[in-house]
Image (cartoon, rainbow, N blue to C red):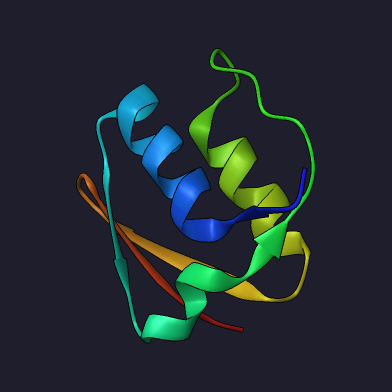
Length: 69
């Protein structure tokens, strides 16, 4: 609940062995609420975050680039 994207990214990095890079610094501070389960597909979780209309992702191997929608 009310977690900044930077904290969500840390958790997803641990679970799925990926690295997040941000197009702009302010993206790290965007707040999201919801539930994630460790065994959910990582792409599903990213899709849910993308569906908020706030951010978009481009994945290149194990690096996920975060940008505004």
